[in-house]
Image: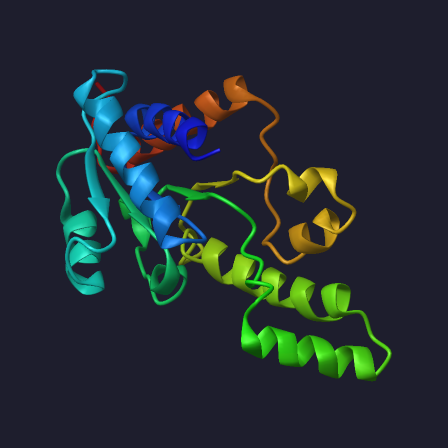
Length: 206
């Protein structure tokens, strides 16, 4: 999953000119994805990309480097970056979430809550895990659109969002948005962001 997603991120970020944030559900996935992006860039499999990764500087420093970057940049992070990240305007235009952020099933707090729900005759998954996931997904997606004038693309790289019965409930937690059906529509949407960015700056895209 991670190598394939990295290939897609490299392709999309190259076309967009960076401005890409990848949020993963684990630090291990963030490390692997960042390493693969560096490798793809070194191999010339995508356009030049500067890869910023969690753990290589403080959160504040990484966000500032990403915000002021003059070269195409991708920030790959997990954990604390799911909230408290404010990148308004065109600093961030593509947000990729690798997987649905379900809480770990062995989390002691979630285990205790699951037992409480079951005692009340409720379902631990639909009444506990699912609402937590919806809230986390909404928080993560909120990194993309910070004002009414912001535009961007959200990618959730988890097929369960469309293949499982609970997918619609999670989709309902997200802001209304147009769904892109294939890579052709994705490319067109990325190009539209580049054109909009160029027009607002009073110049033509290269």
